[in-house]
Image (tube, rainbow, N blue to C red; front, side):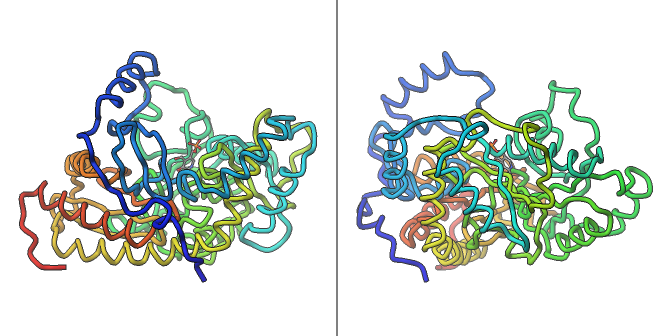
Length: 449
Ligand SMILES: Cc1ncc(COP(=O)(O)O)c(C=O)c1O
């Protein structure tokens, strides 16, 4: 059962609160400096300049307070400064900041490897390699798969996002801008359509074509997929799609890698999204929410798969002791209430979003599970033509009213708040969203909620 969450009591419900239209004067100064000195490749969705946060509330430098439905891209799983996580970080930081887990030992690293190994979905013993980021976990998993199977090819999916390194951008196929100008990319990657029940359900006959015309399954090291696509549009496939890949991997000796970097660590109401589908991967990748914002990720693989020899793969910073402490504290919280809270508040939020569908024709689809919900906006429900412009305007308008949103795919708002989200945060956010959509379309609601 979910433990009572105390954040509403801690911060009161003095939010959302827009004291000065954002960006306020302090925010403007910081933005100007950032614009002058930072890489032009950064996106910066809207002018939020964070100063702090509690639970699912973010405060900006001008004292505005926002309800957060995006968790810094699905990362701040325990909220912005959970006392148990910050205490664990402070305690670890007071002991030592670094020793290098590739070459030496420390307790937090052994503890976290054991913990993740035991939490892995699937039978058998698992081993764990700790990384600095999701991308690094993806990169390592491709190396592991090739080294273990001695095969060159990797199958990935259209709409996928796996990160920013060369292997990761090659595997990704969500937006061409992530690859444009960076080629040549990694050889040996084949993309297949993902199962998108709303717009393009997968046709299993495609398998036959690919294995006949494009690549022999006997040469495929691994099939990598996000059990629920993140950046590609919060697309939740039908369970039979994942079961089909499990079966094909077993038949042809290919490894099944689940990239749960966005979907894992309680976000969907279970520790791993894989559990919703009843499918066990050979390798699971995690990062994002694992450290509540501290940079840490992991490759979790069955022992008979993690066969790379001593010295073949390593990292200077990966599994840093302070980050391990944050991850252990995060897992404690997720296992003892936050995953349950994600399921409970997520169901309430999804029900609320479905009610909004009755009032706003612009919402074409609401999908997902727990606190991983996609709201897909369309120009026309019959054609399902994505309404990208509406989503851009919606993000900005919601921001000005105190609700932090983040898009993905062509026309989707990804609802991925901290797992500490309260009923207040869900209901108040829904009110703001309703108001924004009404304003944007100049439509009067047709029914009372
Ligand atoms: C599914 C998935 N895989 C990999 C990554 C890359 O992780 P990182 O940004 O930590 O390198 C992301 C980041 O958005 C992701 O959502």
